[in-house]
Image (tube, rainbow, N blue to C red; front, side):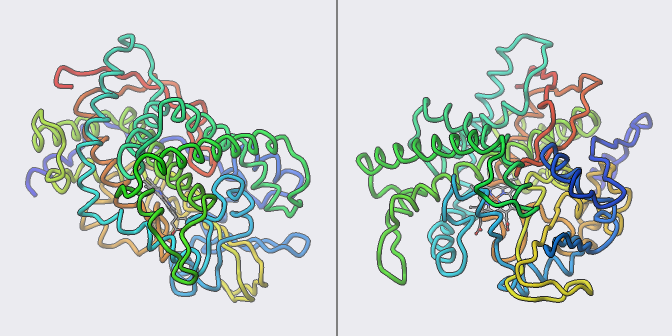
Amino acid sequence: MARDQVEQAEPADARPLYPPTVEPPSEVLPLSRFLPTFVRNPLRTLPVAVYEEPCLVVERKGRHNAWVTDPAMVERILLHEHEDFAKTPLERRIFEPTIGHGILTAEGPAWRWQRRTAAPLFRHQDLLGHVPAMTAAAGRQVERWRAALPGSLARVDHAMTDVTYEIITRSILAGTVPAEDVLIKREAHRMLAWISWEVGFGIVGIPEWVWHPGKWPSRRAAKALRGTVHQLLARRRAEREGAKDLLGRLLAARDPETGQPMADEQLVDNLLTFLLAGHETTAKALTWSLYLLARAPHWQERIRREVVEVCGARPVEQRHLGSLPITTRVLKEALRLYPPAPIMSRMTAREVMLGGHKLPKGALIIIPVFAVHRHRRLWTDPDRFDPDRFLPEAEANHVRTQFMPFGFGPRTCIGMAFAMIEATVLLASFVRAARFEWDGRHLPEPVSRVTLQPKGGMPLRVTVLGNG
Ligand code: HEM
């Protein structure tokens, strides 16, 4: 405790850090401005009231959209009355070409079966067995940085995608080959780059058959992704049926209602869901964490000291994870300011009363996690970087769902523990091994493309230290 108190003191010259955010419009945007703004960055369409009020409802041509940020209402939607707030047709419209009817988009018994099949892979104790694969991947990344031109700017966002992808394909889902890895990362990036067109059209009610510039690039990307995972599936079937990883479990599963195994299309749906959801989000958590640490060097130094004190020069091990409170606090603050999944949505399955508004069946509910995490009524000085918000005594005063980077209720992220272990191991390993510096200019706007991307990427100066 005493050590922590001494370490909490910020250097006198450390100015409060207000990292880049999005300037909200003062009013709800008219339809003519909504769509072009949404395509550029969906977060720019969240009016200021979303950051100040518990709930904002807009009706346009008989279509209701509700932005909900109040923790009690969020709990009602995601937990207590989750059956009245279904996954949206919008979400299916966006994701179905790529991940079909897998665990992320399915509902009811079809979802429950897939969730139960995958759940045993995510038991906390078993996940800890992946820590050596995580530290090994971190070590290989440090070597790549060491080999780069000293003093040059490194694309940290690309590096984080490479490392987290490597980890997911060497832990819960083995068996890809290098050419497939290149294709999957490239096409996943392409798909997300165009996705706001389909989402924006869906929100304003333009039918799915209407053409837009994102139509073909995202369809081509979806086709390439599915084709590649079909190949992987065929190879794995031939090679090693009975393996204990995700594919092994999916192959062995039987539908409790029909007794049938999963069809190939459904296997591909789930493999792709885990491949994509299982690396891109964690990559973004780390990208933004390293940016914040480059902007707040005294926090970077505190993490470095903590890791050296706890782990010495040895790789981070599972027994160390509970003894890295500063690293964990910074990670949580990065997840608050830059939630990797910044917007969630649901649809009313029947008429409901919400925040004094009567919403008909089929109303779109948007939970902008980005705004919940910066809500004026929930956080003091919400745009300021301050990891001490997550000191245990401060955290004890948070209401549930005021901090919800992994969602909430039965559809909470199945990979939450995996992601937290992975992000802690990687952040601790990287900061001990290298110094991350800001170029003094780059102020990346956070842009929502399903995941939260830094506009212009994340170039940082990375200097590998002697103890790396
Ligand atoms: C920092 C990293 C991550 C974040 C912020 C994140 C966030 C989320 C969120 C918010 C949801 C809920 C969506 C909703 O209710 O509409 C979700 C669901 C999901 N996530 Fe993650 N996730 C992360 C990492 C992972 C990892 C590592 C995996 C797999 C290894 C994963 C797999 C999934 C799956 C399969 C679902 C769907 C669960 C269901 O509907 O039952 N995620 N994630």
